[in-house]
Image 1 (cartoon, rainbow, N blue to C red):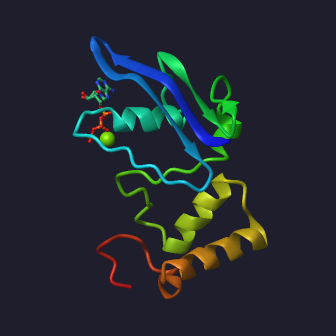
Image 2 (tube, protein in one colour):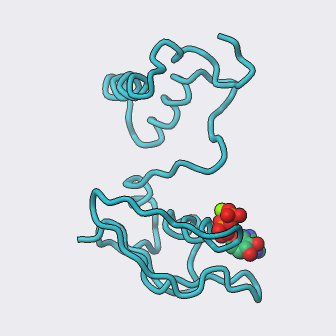
Length: 138
Ligand SMILES: Nc1ncnc2c1ncn2[C@@H]1O[C@H](COP(=O)(O)OP(=O)(O)OP(=O)(O)O)[C@@H](O)[C@H]1O
Ligand SMILES: [Mg+2]
């Protein structure tokens, strides 16, 4: 089964057809790269997959379920790493992870374990208590 299915997606901004009948599927464990020049419609497609933007027509299915109406439950099943840095610079790395983990319903011991696991994964366990601001020296 496709973990993600995009069917005949269309989106216009006024007279501009930003996404014009796009379809594709992604099976579990697969990776898909959406390539195209500036303005091709990549961000518009991703925004519709995430439920941030409603398509004019067509549909998005995640794990076989239509993304429509209340998108809250499906949003809790997906994640997105945005193009721009999305960290709160005044918070430490650990505090940022606590915030985003909490948004996904993690708390207490499971949250602390997930944070340690992921700081280890990227080799930043010893920097967990540093602010994420680029200018922060420690
Ligand atoms: N909110 C908007 N209002 C009007 N036009 C928009 C809006 N967002 C995007 N567009 C236009 O829709 C088209 C697709 O934009 P989109 O941002 O999806 O492209 P992209 O492939 O992500 O581009 P980039 O590689 O620059 O990130 C572009 O022509 C863009 O100018
Ligand atoms: Mg873009």
